[in-house]
Length: 145
Image 1 (cartoon, rainbow, N blue to C red):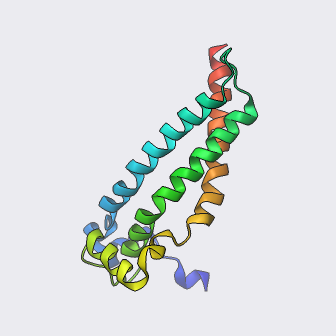
Image 2 (tube, rainbow, N blue to C red; image 1 turned 90 degrees about the vertical axis):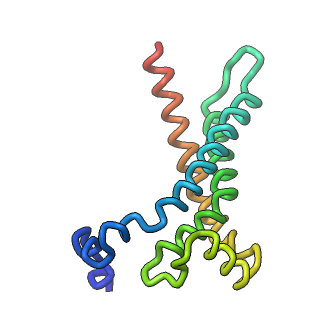
């Protein structure tokens, strides 16, 4: 049941200890830093390509740029997300770090193991970041006018 699966922060601290709370944080950075580099550089370049010679870009094109950038970053970030998720899952058998986890995942199923869940991630993160950047751009335009 949902109640038995719920763990309070204090229960988690008691079960894992302080060190356990940060298990997988290094691999999370290895996922998030490249993700953000890919995302923002893609967004800038896609939006630039869709901007008119007069410097105008429509809301639809801003939204499309954000969706495309979010989907690209989600796809290329999936391998590290899979490794991170396997390390952080409860009672994980992957306790010897990211490299060992990646080697074992490859041995279990080849490169395909690293892209499990890529399309659902893309389907969520593309629109999410597209909408977020559209509203960011609209707010920036409003505040600068």
